[in-house]
Every structure is written in C-alpha cells, then in structure tokens.
Image (cartoon, one colour):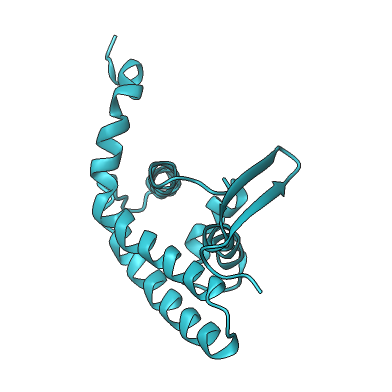
Length: 156
C-alpha cells in the first residue's frame, strides 16, 4: 500500500522521450491523473486535450503555467483566424478552471469513498491546488519568464 508522502521512482516513456523522476506518490499520481482526465470524455477537462497531446510529466508550477498559457493562446489564435472573438488577455481562463475545480472535487469524493489509501485522493487534491493557483498567478509567472522572450518582443 502506497501513501501520499512515500517516495517513488517513476519512468514515463513515450515515442518522443523517457522521463524519470523521484518524487512523492501523490505527485506521480497527480501527473498521471492529469493526463487521464485530460484524455477522458469529460467535457470540462476536454480543454486540456492539447496539453495531453504534448504531455510533460512531473512539470513544475512555472512549466505548467507556461504550457497552459501557450495552449490557451494557440486556441485563441485559431478562434481569431476563424473570425471568432479571441481572448489574448487570458480573461476566460478562470472560467475554464472553475469547471475543472468542480470535476476535481467530485472525483476526490468518489475516490475517497472507493479507497482506504490517500495517495490517489491527494493526487486529485494536488491537481485542484494547481487549478486554483494557475489562473490566479498566471500573469505573475509569465512575467517572471518574460525576459526569455526579449528577442521576440523587439521590433526591428
């Protein structure tokens, strides 16, 4: 039986790469559950399918924020190109995450009723923490990495 804080060594293999990490069981399961939920048929998590397609196992908070912003802005590019309104300020991102919060809460309740171990439940709770933090902090996190984009921001 694995508990949340147990240290595990996990390897994720895909066609593109192999990623190995030593981390807590709940962190490993959160990465897996994020992928599973994004790939499921749930309409609230369907917005994350592009992130599932380009999955980055065990991503940090800043990596996750970057990937979320990139995914969202690519979608806005497609909307704009199709003549639909687009949201380049990330204003609607919070609405997306409110729906995900409801899914996470329901999933955690069902898993809590189905298992005696806490690792999988805490993995969902960890995903839910990200779903609260990312929309609130995304602009700050992106401001931190802005210097990396200076060459693209210069008008020549």
